[in-house]
Image (cartoon, rainbow, N blue to C red; front, side, top):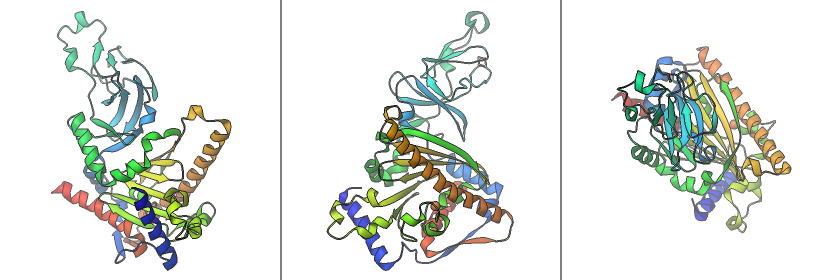
Amino acid sequence: MNRSDERQLLKQCLSLLEEKSTTLSPESHTSPTTRYTDPARFEQELKAIHQRLPIAYLHSSELPEPHHFRTIETHVGSVLFTRGEDGQVRAFHNVCRHRGTRVESRSSGCTKAFSCPYHAWRYSTEGELVSVPFEQTCFPELNKGEHGLATIPCAEAHGFIWLCPLADSQEAAEQQVAQHLEAVSGDLAWLAPGQLHVFEQHRQRWRCNWKILQEGGLETYHFKFAHKNSIGPYFLSNTCVTNQFGAHFRVVMPTERLKEVTEASLADTRLRDITHIVYGLAPQTTFLVQKAHIDWIQMIPVSVDETDVIITSLIPTPREELSAEEFTHWKRNQSISIATLDEDFELGQSIQAGLNSGANQSLTFGRNEGALAAYNRWVEDQLHAFSD
Ligand code: FES
Ligand SMILES: [Fe+2]
């Protein structure tokens, strides 16, 4: 994305404003409700999508220096992320090679070695088994070189750490991430999320299918109604520019300030000053891009009708360097984002309850909800490709 792309998007927003319209697909669609209620299908989605594609679990600023670590519950169990002496990020199953105890129980910290709480086998930040109590007497044949923590290939790119369980090496993980993000790499370079810092994180479990939450970010049809008490009055209703980039989506959502933009002021207007932009990055990452910060939203499937949502505010200044005034500013921003997203997620729960009741056999996506239909087509394609 460069200035010319920004201008192009602003012009598209202005055209839609004039037409009182939005990005329209050629036709409306229906979507079977079993996509959201069938537990067997949910398991297939995990295998075909979440366990195959790279997923961002950490922001780079969460492992700022060598020897920093984080433990995270992922779809492949508890994972220990470390930044080694060499600055490289590595990911390991957080499972001791002796008898399987969880090696590190803290969620984050800084250490040069991890000691298993059961019999104190010790591992380096590179995952090597470095010491075993009573090794000579009790494990005379143990080859420590073959008993390091089990590695999960991961890659650091665009300011995030991506887990790639199916890659067979760090290099393969890097290639897989680059390939997965290729279609949006220009936009990610423009956003530069690697230059931001984690402010705060908010986690909550919602009783609805993960796709319902993803779909909620792909249209602005609901803004004036569902968000009438929060952000609705500040945005154009049912007006957005939607683009699909392979597995990923971008939705540019103009605020009322678009009405002040003229042909003359267009060249000096920054896209982020007068819009919010949602990036839906397959399979479970959403960025809500605002003027100076990004809310990174992870939607982690738990069961067919449960999803954990983690909202992480990424801001331009490290948290510890904020003045009291800046802290209050970002805290207020975070509260507004969470309150607004909660409105979406509560509606998501309402949808799931409705679908579970069996009242409807299908959902209807209008031409203004074409991205939702396209998103579901992408999911279907993944399921078919996996079963072939
Ligand atoms: S299970 Fe970890 S040291 Fe025994
Ligand atoms: Fe919304």
